[in-house]
Length: 193
Length: 193
Image (tube, helix red, strand yellow):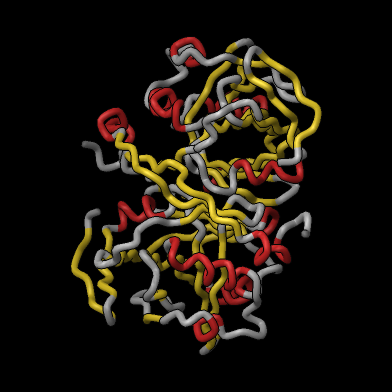
């Protein structure tokens, strides 16, 4: 991956990823953690309903009143999308099955908030990747939030890189083997050859 | 999966899937084929930018003028989302890198169109699953198409069930092992225990 200057945070080396490649962090459809900040309170939600909308990069997520984080997202119009790996699955499920209304999720799930550069919600140190996002549109009718990514990081020192995909029935699919079709795809890649 | 009465089409047994579970066909984020029909002409596009929007089920896909299929989708407001498996990857990539403007993709990629029940675009016999959809909204500003699924089928006789996930850089991730967290997730499943 094209990475730029990074910073070491404990044992995690978060390297800044060129924004033009940040869509590749979400295109495969991994379950993600989304952090928000309301006043001085951080929160995290688990989201599987995400989509790439543009290479620039723009993302969409589906969420609404049923998530405690939605109020902060609507009010402050910022979030961080963090991409967890399979070793974090029980935390991911745990975060998705309790509410920030009565739980400090960073503390309960022993995750480390790391200050972001351009938004107030924190990165999650333990995750493979983090994407700082600004809300650019809320399509209330469909509960779709459109996000512009403004910075992205990958922990290049991390050994476990396999993400997980929620099926929606309580099971999760772990990334299996990778198949390379770069030659066939050359004409479709935004950065060309 | 909860399947209902099906029909045999050649060697494929397409069983109707209860609509309340159809979102589980897309939630994990597989690359999909989307069929459209313009007049008497069928077309197929490869789409990786998809999202579940509601359990009912409602889906979103991102597409626009850059896809030849978009004109038919906007005009006729119907499509079928077909879920291919890893053995079909080269067809999936091939479909995504040529245009329906000058290619009959069913013929070129040796795929079999099967009449749908409630929409005019065809199912694809060779795929693991097919979802008949009606366009319920087009958010032109973001090129997001919102789809209501009206029927869903799964080929239960198929041995290869592993889907693939596009990374966006010309590589694809094949489904790996499955992890069961149904007990932890009970409170979040739309059909309960």
